[in-house]
Length: 108
Length: 119
Image (tube, rainbow over all chains, first blue to last red; front, side, top):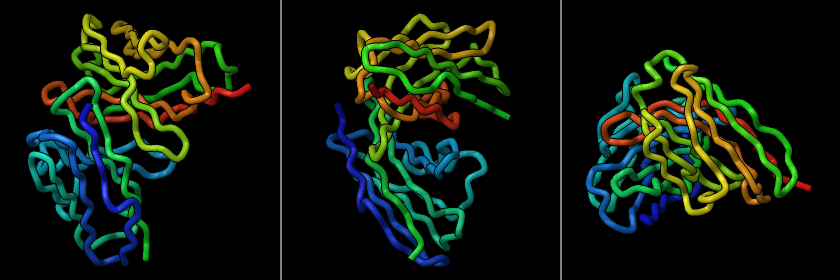
């Protein structure tokens, strides 16, 4: 099973600034990495797949990068609606699909 | 638009059973594989099960294998999760999610249904 590790667990950033979230895989997942956003009481939303491809309707301020075992989600010019929990997900080797433990992005 | 609506959650005693459902709309349900994913209180997301578009292939997490059964009714656009021999550690919000159909990430999710296993 591939273990996904996200850092930091909590990130405090002011609106208008940028946030960088990290995700590390215990072995290579190539480019088969997705990022999701989850807000309380809402369905999780796909942001990025293929490590760097934005899903339909996702604003350009969300960008993903990386390959192999190291991945980054960058959110530029943070807006109030961006404060949420973010999860990475590897779909290179399954079953099982595995997720990181999440990074909570909070308002500073 | 794609909609996934889970139902069937509730409070159940350890050892009992519960069946969750996920009503799909806005897409051709019979063409997509579907997943169940859960999130226990204070924990991260955990993949639970996958069923292929035609129900021919099914996969399970080790933590639920032999106790949970995923199924689907393509004529009624509904996904199911039969949960038997429930344990306290199965307490979680259960989400259904659509497989993208190619790379196998999850492109749409429901809002989830809460299952609480407690005596």
